Length: 128
Image (cartoon, rainbow, N blue to C red):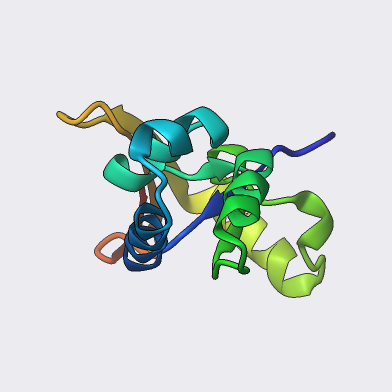
């Protein structure tokens, strides 16, 4: 399975990069024509497609500090270390876990993983 890699840039770094490009004569409209999804990444905090990020680095002229994500923040299975600890976690999730999905008032997907360790104690993990 091929993964579409997305690039996450810290908001401060992204805004500083934008200010540097503006000082070089680039307007937001020009940058958005060159870099698909730039305004969504700048104003809404979205990730950029890998190709768009390469275009942004190309016009910026310097490497930009970033994190690599897969589409929908999925984990690339080839990077998972398969060992007994992972197997134990999967057994716990399959046996004592509830998984939930809901959409909040901002129309964002939210996920809940709830593991019941005994009758009284619960461990919850939220992912947005």
